[in-house]
Each structure stands twice: as structure tokens, then as C-alpha cells.
Length: 460
Image (cartoon, rainbow, N blue to C red; front, side, top):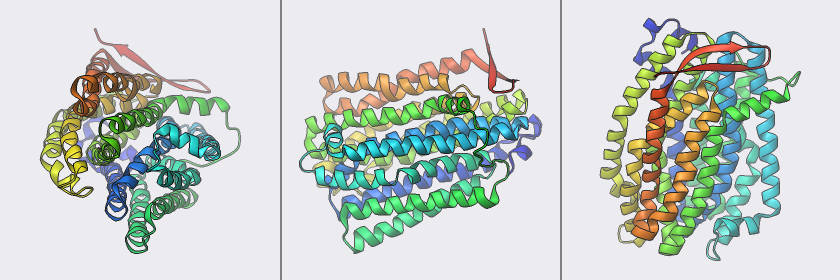
């Protein structure tokens, strides 16, 4: 569905139309989550829970590469959507092109540096003698696939900003199905172990990236890749505007290291395996929040660029109602379905199962608060205020989380580790709520030759 058809007037903006536009984005998020979970199931069932722990040890490297991609994908696509709404195709093309070039160059440089120093980096991340071999194999495959990792994220967001969320979903769908098929072949049938799992993931990412290239080569609507007259400052603005999502991924990388070290201290390799299971399962539920927020982001940006503040307000009202209802249902499902979900990764009689089950029910309390925090940050990014959204993300994903990860385990043991995320999300919730109540964007666009900005009005 074309964005312009949804946002003609505020009277024509209906929740059904908005959901129809958002649905492919949510399905993209859901399917990314599902095939990531299936990847973990194959490793835990056909290899070992120690290999699952190795994957979790390596994942901070993946988070950093994803953070580089998302800085430009979310920030650049939001600015591109604003430019398209304002009718300035040249600036939209610049945001798109600079984001592609900058992120792939930075991501590839990071990959090369880590590959040269892979063993000491893995030791720093928490690899033990038991998991080091698997960590090296899995880490090498992800780092070698860095351009595809970054390209897949970029194309997913910019295709959505181009007004084709179904194509964006097709990227996740095709790459995900290919990954699952290869998991069955490499891991289950050919017994290739963690190498097979990593290779399946890398090839799935390559396919997704290839489909993104095909879209912009043949089927694009508004955005066009160019290497002519690309201002350096445009790249800086795209990166700064996407700072929130980049901080989120970098914070996940750091806190995963802390989680792993804490779990290793309290429960050994079984503790790291339990952390891995919970991280896989939380993607399934939190994907609802990310899917909705990222799906509505292009609509907010387009309405901003098109000088329609009343539409932005209506879209926000729909969002607040959604995030008032969804968290209660999601936590209820988490609590009820946790035993069934954990059995996909560990045997019921195992220590890993008991650790993951009790941990999931405590960790899941964060779903009551995280949805609104995620939307509050994405909303600011959509309006070109990513540097402010970065504050919310920094608090919930890093600063407050680290504080609670250090303090709570001293008082409550491993239960305190699981409660650190809910505590951080609850503390950030008040700040997110305050940002919405105190600062309501008028979405009046102020444009000059080189930049976009939005004016905000404080309600007293």
C-alpha cells in the first residue's frame, strides 16, 4: 500500500489501513525472530548446549555489526522518508546512497580488524576452553559475511521507506526459509555441527542481500542509488539520527558479555546456555514491539515531511492505545508458554531447562514496560531527533541495565540477574512517559538547502 494513499487527510487515516501497512514489517520482524530461534534449536538439539553457549558468546560481534547497519538504516531511512514526503528526491537519494556506502565500509573494516585478532577478542567476550573452538568457527563465518549482514538490514529499512513493505518482508522470508532448509541439510543430515549452522545463516543473509539489490535495480519507486555529489555531512546526519538503534545494539553487546560472565560465575556453562535460550525466546515477544514501531516509523516521517501534524498526532494516538493493551497479553503468554518453549532447547530433566524456565518468567516482566520505551525512541528517530531517542535507548539498554546487573545478583543471586532487565525497563518507562507528555512534536518542518529539522513544542 502506498504511503501517500494512507496519509492524504487525517479523516482518512484509519487504524485498519495503518495495520495493513505495518503488517509486512511486523511479519518481517516475526520471521527474523522465528528463523533465529530455529537456528538455535538445531544447534542445541543436533550439536550441544555448549555450542549454543558458544553462539551466545560470539553474538556481541554480531550486535556490533548490526548496530553499524542500523545506525544508517534507521537514521537514513527516516530522513529519506521525510525527504520523499517533502518532495525532495535528491536529498532522499543522498540519504540512501551515503547510508549504503558508509555502513558497508565501516562494517567491513570492523570485521577485518576482529578477524586479525579473533582469539584474544573471543577470550575477552568470555569464551572458555570448552567453547573456544566453536566460538572461532561461528565467529569467523559471521565476520566473513559482514557485507551481507549489513546489506540485509539496510535494504529491509530502505525498501520499507520506499513504500514497499511487502518486498521488505520478502527479504526476511526468502533468507529465513533458505537458512532453515540449509540448517536441516547441514546440521541435521550432514552433521556439520556449528560450522553448518553458521554457514546456513551466512548464505541466508547473502540471499536476502541479493534480493534487496534486485529490488533497487528493477522495482524501486522513489529511491535511487547514486555516487554523484554525496555530501559527507549527509552521512553524519544519517548516522546521528540512527544513534538510538546503534546504541541499542552496542549496549546489547556489552550487556551480553556481562550476562555471560555473571551466568558463568553463578551456574557455569549451563548458565550461559540458559541465557542463550532466554535471549532467543525474548526475540519472539519483543519482535511485536519492534515490528509495530518500525512499521509506523515511515508513516510518521512521511507525514512530517508533508506538513501534516494532525496525521502524526492521530498515528501516535493509535500507537499509545496499542502499547497500553499489548504488554499485558504478551507477558501473560510468556508466563504460560515458557515451559513449552524451553523444551525446544533443553530436556525437561536438565539443569539448563530449570534455569531457563525460572529465568524466562522473571525476565519476561520487562515486556510490561519495554514496548512503550521502544516506541518512544523510534518515534523520536522518525521525526529526525535520533540524538534524543538515543538517551532513552542508552538508559534502558546500557546504563541502568549495567547498574542493576551489578547490584541485583549480589542480593538475589541468579534471580537478580534475570530481574536486571525488568528493573532497567521499569526505570526507563517513567522517562519515556515524561518525554511523551512534556514534548509533543508540532511536526512543522524547517528546511534549508542542506538539512531537515523539526520544531518541538513543550506542553505546560
